Image (cartoon, rainbow, N blue to C red; front, side, top):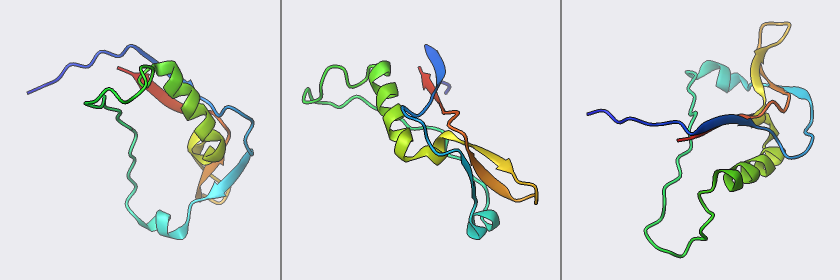
Length: 101
């Protein structure tokens, strides 16, 4: 059984404010553990009517994500390798991929 998904739009959401521009080491434990990536967060409509009508508007979600990325700024960065060959997070504020489908 397959499911077709139609992408309405995709864009990068950046932090709402300037964030520190620096590199953060990946911990030694993270270097030893198998690398996995959880690239998605799913939102589902609730079964009741207690939630505001704009809960699933893409613009509202993007604005909230942009504000959250200020505090969790490493998430808006990229993985890179430093001059010694060690993996690090390059906190550059490039943002995260937001896909509306």
